[in-house]
Image (cartoon, rainbow, N blue to C red):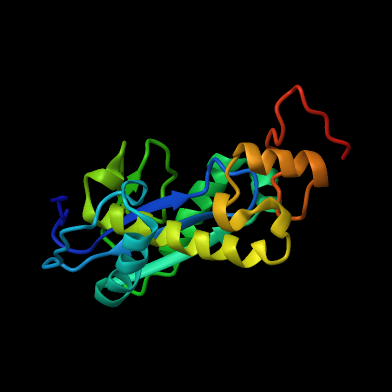
Length: 198
């Protein structure tokens, strides 16, 4: 059972998904859960099946005190780098909260101050705190849905399955078909033994 962190009021947990992908956005979410929130299966999204994530998403959206989700797209990732894009996504997700948190806990070890609200970074926080775990579920499910949508436009990359991650299949498709507007051009899209005409 994960801990529900409460510091004299509302606390937001925030996390991102898709940081290591070659295509598509990095997606961040922020969630404030009520003090009495309980869920036996909620944990880090990476530890859950797709089916369980899809079950949890509407539960979180319905029962959360507030939540927000934001995509940061490849052109911006290429401009400001993936770390800054991940943090920007978290800030934009926090912007969407209908309640103002008094404290923010962040999955990982990097963050930039958000307004004047105190924050704490927590390595593997998505496996320790329910509000971060909830944010990880929303970030992952919203991003997966986006990748499935753009898969219809470029089915040869099979983003419906690989979600833009650097699988052998995805890299073989880049080698064969080149890149799209959804690829992150600042990333090493192909191993050094491949060449790609850009």
